Image 1 (tube, rainbow, N blue to C red):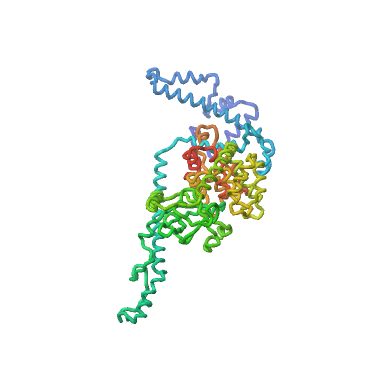
Image 2: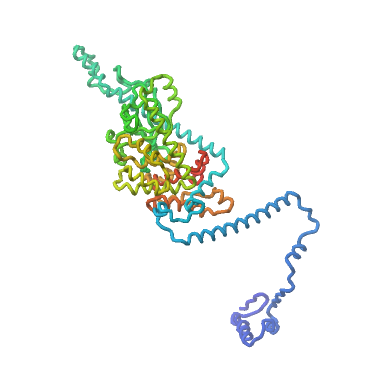
Length: 558
């Protein structure tokens, strides 16, 4: 059978003959053109003449028709913008390459350990700032992002609805618990039955005796003088609180408290949420009359004037055996009020008209606050632009001095810490701080309280967003977050330098991780205390609360 391919007749047995012949001719030095002339049956491929090719500009001029209309001003403007953007992009690309080269030169020197860098200051300092200081300051760039009012309003509305739902859930549970407990456990409940037996008044034979009947909250027929009523419990002040602790699991507990005006008692509940829809409300501090356990008011009962945003409530952990073990390790449980129902507070203050205190305790506390405020203002000037490095290093250094792990240090240890970090505090100021903190005369104070006393701390509004960011990262509720999870969750797409092209997203992320790792005692995880210290130092140089909230919200998406 014969096959015909491209006009060439050939048999199956002779298909390879032209190729073998071509190989023989090539071995003899003949060109492909002479070989094609000898074999006229094959198609001739013309040679490519490079000289006949015309210039691309001339080619375009021939292709473009001559009757096209002239470009309008709109397209001319677009062309100019495109041209300007291309020039600016090339300029930024050149600057970025120059900065990379400069950073590679500065990173050639060997780096020491984290503690040595923070304490000895062996890193190269330019204009009073180290490399870590400059990298930490990059986070302040999120404050320059334009304020998105619509997006922020949607988020705030959702947060307000969730907060109101939480308050309502906790308030309903508190009312049910205390009304039921008051009715069932009231000792006057049995007096009526005893009087009936003593008077030999036999009840109806169809009705069982009262002592044999099962009494519940809604079925009881006995009214006593001391029984709580819903009206009495309604005269209350509701507040939100958090535990002051470096343990992330305890610091992130959502606590809701109530102060009842009719008997000056208080109770605290813990609100727990499991997933999106399942919640639970459990008693954390039982309802009782409590008193201050430290400070100028030690031994005095809590009154209405002791409740305001930023106030501390202290309890002895030994008085509450049902507290978690991590909290019972400390002698004192310190709870900070973060939010309060101001309308209810003002209403109760208007009704009570009681004299607050007959002694000079409020004036002494005011003087203490003024002294600490003056010291904090002086030290914040020294911490300008290097707050992250100093605060995180100070926390690690004090933790290393605490050999016993009690969180307490003596006067000599605290005094020697300040010169190590170049914090200048006069002898009189240090003695004033020591006298305020060492009110019980034990000779040791909590070094966390000492750090907050001399440097201060960000307000509760800012801390609420730091806690939200950490709670989003710590989805397992362990109090520590692996660095791998932080790297996955941190998003630098909206950083101004990334948007403008000065830096890449990876560069901003690496700068954040490097400064955060410098604050950690472990290289593979971050605790809540270290995470809070980082943003505490970053907060020092930011005046506006909304700017700080932008810095926390944008990279973490909260």
